[in-house]
Length: 193
Image (cartoon, rainbow, N blue to C red; front, top):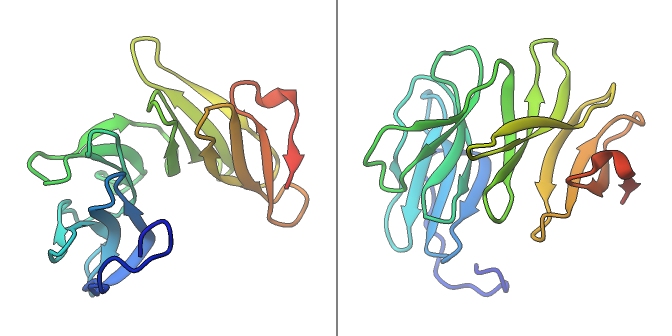
C-alpha cells in the first residue's frame, strides 16, 4: 500500500515477529524493520521492493526503531554492550559495521530526526528510571538539550516538517495524552491535542 492508500504490490510476508513497526524510504522502494525471527534477539532487517528481507545487523543484543536517513542509510537504536541503548547508523546494504551517532549513559528510545537531520529528538530513559525527551544537535557545535521533563513518562517525540513544533506523549496528568509545544523554545507553552 502506498501513502495514498492504493495497493502497489501484493504484500510479502516477513519471516519473524515485527518489532517497532516498519519504516518506508522516501522513494517508497525500500522498507526496514526490527524483526525477531524465533528465539533470536531483534535485529534490523531490510527489504527492497520485490525481494525477500535480509538482516543487516548481526548482534546478540537488541536493535530497534530503524529510521531512513536522507542518503538512504538507516539510523537505529541498538545495544552493543548489553547495558544501554545508543543511536547508530548503517548503510542500507549492510556493507559496513554500524557506526555510533550518539552514545549516552541512559537509554535512547524512539528517535525522530528533523527534516534537515541536524537534530534528533528522543526519549531518554535515565539511569534514575525517569523518561524525558531530549534533543541532540549534530555538527561542530553539537549539544544535547532537555525539551520535556515532567514527573511523568514523556516519550514518542516527533518534530514537525518545518522544525517549529514538537509533538509528544506524556502521562504527566495521570493519563497518556498528546501535547504540542515549540521545538526550539519548549518553555514557551504547550497545548494538549
